[in-house]
Image 1 (cartoon, one colour):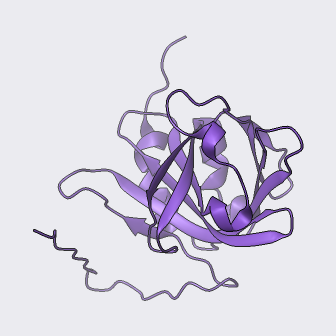
Image 2 (tube, helix red, strand yellow; image 1 turned 90 degrees about the vertical axis):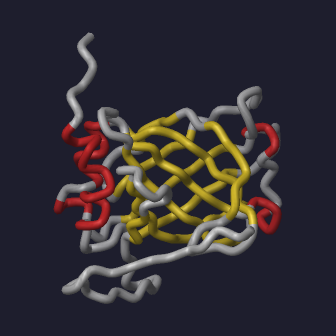
Image 3 (spheres, helix red, strand yellow; image 1 turned 180 degrees about the horizontal axis):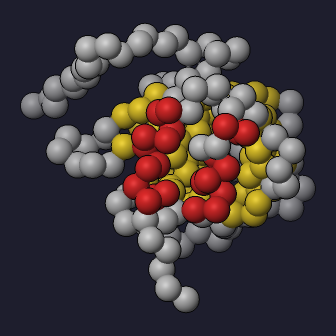
Length: 192
């Protein structure tokens, strides 16, 4: 039996078309009846002389002051060896450097897994997972970040490997991102 896929738009919603010069945040509710929302946009990833589409996704679980960030690529066309990053016993964990505009890059540990691609890609993708702390997340949703370039970079786990990079232009309308991560911004930080 195949599960039905449905989508809807509420009256008054505006239609937006995603293009490289006009990126948008696509907001999704991956699990029916659950409050989790995701916001994703797309960009490009480079490894050596090769380029592929990449997806950047942020999500938030209620009560968690950190948002989940997923960086998704198809590593085979790039020639990138994702095996060292895969699973709970992975031998490599980054760092994944994330910088926005002129802000200094922030180092994040990552874990990886294979999954079906989302809206912006076809087939299977490798997903690098990390968390974006509340202080960083506040900048992501600020007016200052609109239209800025997000740069991600990850050094290959094996000696002699190149730098895996990706670039995304943050949409000028950040309403979708704000909606998807509101619960994280509203969450109370854990006491020290």
